[in-house]
Length: 212
Image (cartoon, rainbow, N blue to C red; front, side, top):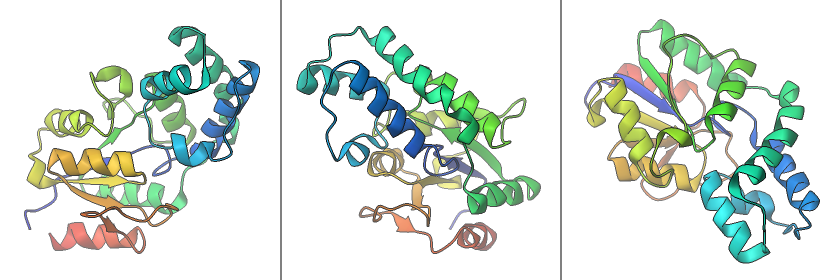
């Protein structure tokens, strides 16, 4: 295999244990808006972009707020809990090992820019010059491959030289559609989709890169 020059990380659920807080904030926003909260909310929203979710809430739940007001309401509840944000220890440690080894890294997220910035600061990964691609930077979010292709271009790395690290089906679909080899983190509760390898632990990622 071509030597791996870049690792493109998903953020929520992969580097940052933020999905429970995001779903909790969404639950509160839905309740305030008088919407019925489905019991399987978590499974139905994880990995989906905010604009996709907004269209779903309008079509299936009768949401009548404009998208800006809706996002403001969600962000209000999320930022109130931001102090609880934590990184996944093995993933954060792997990031630092790859950084020391000179492997280029970027973050590609379906979250808005404000969420990306808050989350990465909370887990100590924010730094000048870090390549991050948020939903606001793109025409289409995951499962479209645009975000991963943009990150590879910004890092000046060919798709054969990259790895995508994900935790959701929509993110994995984006990685696969980009033509980049895609891996699932070991702490995800989902099974890896076809074409995606589930890591046994994060040390396996180091071994894959060292042996490439």
